[in-house]
Length: 314
Image 1: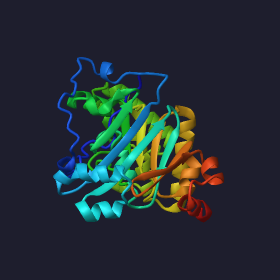
Image 2: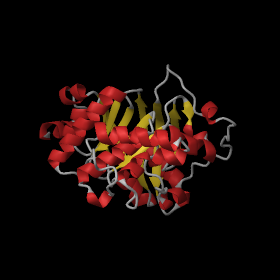
Image 3: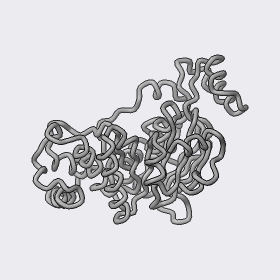
Image 4: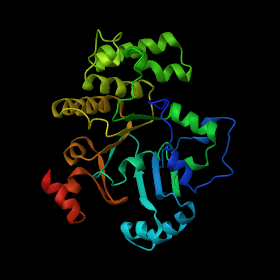
């Protein structure tokens, strides 16, 4: 099995989301071998969400009420008014196949960035199921969850999250170092990426503040991919870049994907970006997935007026 680390080591779980979560798993497993807990299965999707809900609220006792209201079809604004609860993710079910770029898109407040943080349990859901290669991720204990993040699911954020006191080489190889891989081999792999795929030859001893935004994001992307994850989560990874650099990064991602064939979950608010890079696209609004389809399906058969306006504006 390929191995990865959570690329932005040190990112903490949102404290508020931890306080309000009512999804308690008292009997989480601590397997003797993590590979037994996170198995492989070719006949199931690599990632699957089933009826996922996430509610943010200072009133823990009202979260179950808010979920019940959401299940009954009550609008998000009415639930907020009656309970003080914000239903950020509402009955989301998705199936993501190995080797595809699955884009989740929507405007600010749609729930897309909250949703992607469920895949590696940076945010805990209040209800629903999350499966990785057929294994219930919500039942993993802390050790198995740590191993899943280190070896199977990487992440790249919009803010790059490079370590400012480390060089380009040290940033790229960081995930392999903390995983315990041999230093010499890891350094050689990182140099191959820096000098080849990244186009940053001569920059391996530079620090992040000596790089442009596009260069820093290339380093962030390489840090995740050098560790060879099964799944790469990208939360608006290119959104902070200038348009030309953003287009260049999209091209680099597609070139790397053609070679490496990773499973990528990509978050964006830009339909043009989604259409360019996505194998499948899920469009979200108010925490709900409105439509899932290929770029051609989204373009030719929008599910409703909201999606149609997106398509017409792109």
